Image (cartoon, rainbow, N blue to C red; front, side, top):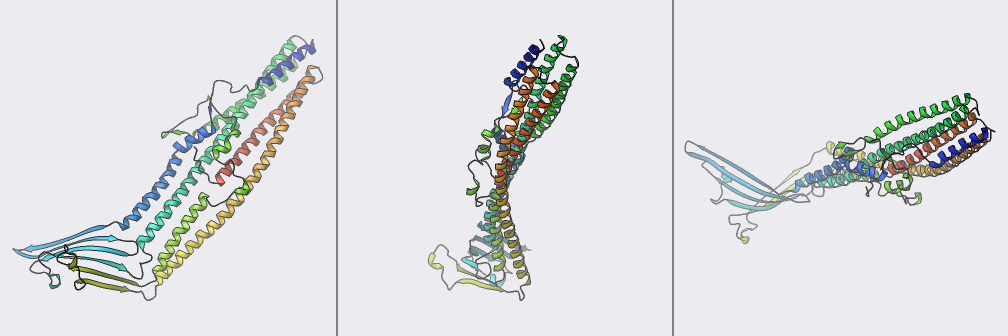
Length: 471
């Protein structure tokens, strides 16, 4: 009778093992990894903030191009006192700035009155002029307007790279939160499964004890096992709740934070699409290159901007020589009225004797440029070495996961063998509980190893600074 009851208990345990997971089998919704990251990239405030970086770059470029906008200037001045018109002056100018320090100008002047200066005496219908002003030395090949536009273009491209880095950072942190949630869910499943197994075992032993086949003290040990499993499950549930809330920090819909509901569970087959979601699939170490890495691109554009600034500072060492020439006519509608005999022109020359300010500015520009180049060179080495280390770490975790899977299989075999021996009266409940505890530890260790493996993939994703296009 004893062997028969033990055999029934053993068969019930096997049925549990074949039926699979018990915890979390209620109706549930799966939040896939790709779907989750898609929500993060589209709605998370930091991801939206990253889009502002690009907008700032575009706005900065528009502002810089404004230095080449045509301008209309009107200056009107009139004085009349006690019936006497002292002066009535009108001066209008239309200017078109161009790239190489050249400015095209059109002008209309009209002056009349009792007390105007002799050099202001103009024809009654006014005087028209058209001409050009330019810088022949300082400001010709490099000037403030030209440098501002060039630096703004580099800043815009740098903003694109910085946007990718910001989006990558928030997706990296969101991925870690998902992996922790998945691990907590799997840990809770383990405790739930083995709690169910312990309850089945307890009921079988209790029936055998009531039938007088075994001592009642065995039910105490079986009940302790049930309570230990229940305690482990409650602790796992608390951890799962915390990880769910941490995941909820990344869930937003239309500027509204979303709290993860209890019936939502992670994708248990994450390994199938993690590489495609993070877009690290098909990026072997031997084909890895740094040319398009966003961080290095950002530093390159920063260096390009500093080089423009250095050229501008070097141009400041040249003397200032500004010249201007304007044709003058009373009849602008006649093309042949613009003749060289009628003109207004001049030049301006300026040269500081020591150029200490200019030489100091140039040295500072060179130091800033060299500092940025050092930063770029260091970043190249750091990224390359880090990516190489991550690839080696991934290879190691593949082997570690294979080993822990074998360990789980072996512990499962040992537990099954111990239960079979117990059914024949050749083992004890203590040994079964001991084997089962080892198996639980192995399952938890497997979950930990898988989590570390996923973490390392996320580290590779971060090191490559990928901004997934398919999300």
